Length: 342
Image (cartoon, rainbow, N blue to C red; front, side):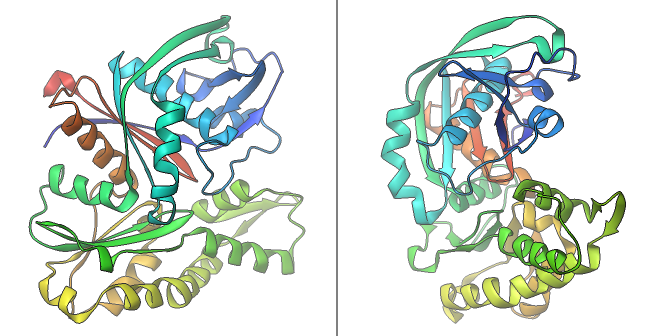
């Protein structure tokens, strides 16, 4: 197992032409990037200084928000490993084939990234060349499986369920490869977030809060409405149980059969949804006595770690050039290897 470095930024952007100076403590929290002569604040800076930070859910690589997040991730990555970079990204099963070729066209090249240093240092505009030497594209769940085998040293056959914001992905991973017929792709945690939003709207005026703000409330377990802190933990638990019963469980029944369970050593949960104990307990209740349900040690970062190991394999084992980018709907995760200890 190699030591990895993980950086995370919220997957949100917003146009902003303000002169922002000394508003962020460091580079990663002060991302302001120029594109087509427009300035965009990205990640934590967009949450702190933006009015309505956003990102299209399951957006295409050709969309502005995806490209800006890719640029931001490269900018972070190049600070860690320099040029050139071998990058792996991922998409849900449902869009993987559709986006594979266009991603190669858009991203496999040199990128001149122009960014503003004023938000974190008070400096001026700088530009940097990010050189992508190779680009691999793979399904998210396969990235998770690769991380479990390469980074967490899991052996044998197992199920992998990636509980992302936009989609829930699942595969049956064997030592000889993926069982194609046992893959699933369905609605992600967003389904439960929207359920919670609907219930809150019945009781409160949400003051034009956007989806990412509701998602933050969902994760935090509270929301401020009309200067009052409203606890939403019980409501969150309720909609998570409904999400599991209405969406996840039926999808699992369709994807995995008795022969799969007879061959499996366990089921691993990953993604942001694996951080919700209520949802994990629903899995454990359904599969009690059938297979062991475990939360990965690196649940929220598992896909990006798998992508980084794939980049390592693609470049012949040079860890100093490998980069894994999980450009998710909620967070963007940047993974590199810690070359100092490898």
